Length: 373
Figure 1 (cartoon, rainbow, N blue to C red):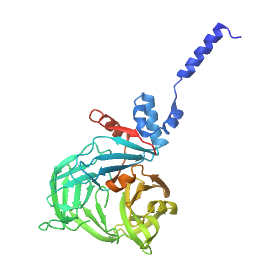
Figure 2 (figure 1 turned 90 degrees about the vertical axis):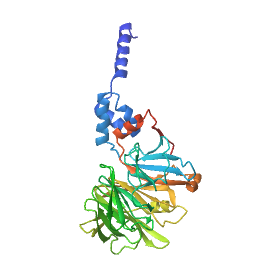
Figure 3 (figure 1 turned 90 degrees about the horizontal axis):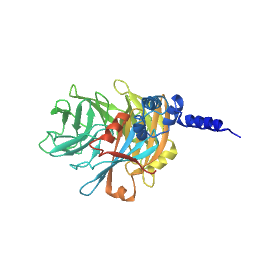
Figure 4 (figure 1 turned 120 degrees about the vertical axis):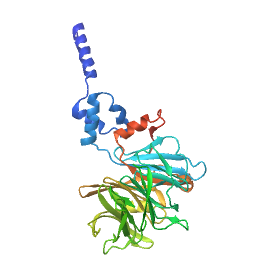
């Protein structure tokens, strides 16, 4: 039978044990299983927790680019909603924020850049969570359905159907540093790195590049590898690598989806990176045909979807020569939205700092909530 002193010592031991802090590797391991949005408040608990959070993100479960899905209603007032898929945490997030002011149809260059282009105005946003929108005058040459992309500190606008008196060869460039439009004349039609703008014809693979520094076009280049019957292809930059994603097979009978890396001074080297597993190809097809695809990429992650069947998404992660394929159910799609809404896909490297700014933006107008799969 315990004495009063023994009971007192046992109680003190239990209290000390319950108050014992979690240190080092154990805390980092715990944080590796915590969703990124919940690591923001955790990083502010204490200096030790802050170090553990960022150490966990560096060494155990790294941050990966988010797929952002924006849904814009077809009818006035064209309300927009935003959802995000975080591959690190394997969850979908609903981002509750005020609807984007409508100017024109919302579009994306399949990167962080979102924009709306109207005859009198251009709105664009560059930050990962699109907190800031830039309002500028429309480009000097009006065109319908042009290609818009960010190259260095230029917003490039090229192609599209121009007015009769306008030059169909014009390329307009908005300098975000000087806040002024600059023009160039050459040819048109997207993948972007830090200094060049690549344009590819989706059926032939015929590609040109545009350098905003020299205001010149280069090419043409044929990106389709020899011996491959490619029906349709798109280009994107994954990190510093120009990649080609193509449908192979025959008209009405797509046999595979392949990914190549294109390099060389004349883009003459085309090396196959990987082939999408057949079950994922079947998911992309769904109940309809697979006549085209779109790819959105950043760093070593590529998201691929079928515009005719946005319900299924495919993710490709490339790591030191290895390809990891996976499918994602697009929770944004339902029977009503499939018919009435337009879907705009972008890709962003969302970090802790971006989430902190989003959660604190303008009196908490931005709140992030998890939604069910």
